[in-house]
Length: 340
Image (tube, rainbow, N blue to C red; front, side, top):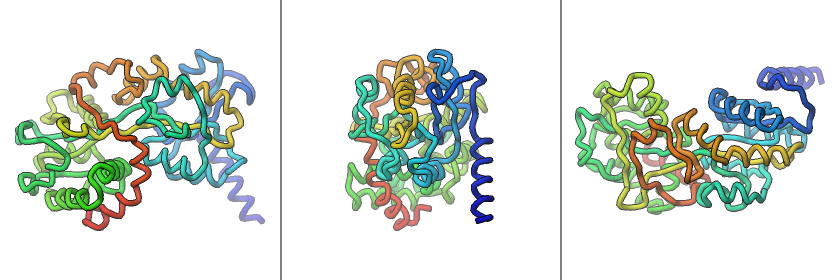
């Protein structure tokens, strides 16, 4: 009993430290609690603006997607969370499959969020789009030599490819959607070719992939575009790297989402729905794009100047929920071919 008491007190202390609240007063009726896998600097300005417009306070806990999902499952009907916000459709799909998100109907969300970027059963909705594309050295690669993700398995790129670890959900989702498009046999052949062409062991993050290209360790890689934008801001626009939009004559560039859903046991679901709908509207969508150099999920929202500078592309219109549905198959496939 004493051990359980100590654990409970520690958990309560962590919860108290993790929460941020605006200085406005208010009770349960005008307070929304969000569990967020998005970093504080990417969500606090949005929540502050929502509070300014509505008077409703937003409290949030930030952590990685896995621990937040485990926490929701453990808390069950006793959870304090009204909303789960996370990155990658694979994570959102897992949350829906583990029955911690409620199914909702909203004309606003259905109008603002394209069908392939939200759960068919209304349990989660994409709020921003991220493209995972090819990055290359402008000093050693002719963009005319680039074409598709699949072509990076060709002999031309032997010893010239760098990748992020397969343990990251972004690469799991890319491979999962390739399985949905090509089937397991062909996808395994492609990913095996990537592994054969690696210049070095996979890196822990996308920034390290780009730094390796700049250093001459490899010539091409696959990254989320906002990491490229951060590198440009850090090192200047003269960084000898550029983005290439692959598969433009086929299905298009692999896209994914960050998104959110209302928890099954939310104590304030009406206010949470108001927040979720607000996040899909024009003002919030512009803020999403500016804060992390992502693409707005609402089609008519204008991109930021830096993002526009990367050029337009055709994105894959496959249902992003495939990233979750085939995630286990993708992980097993990558393990079989030695992609670590």
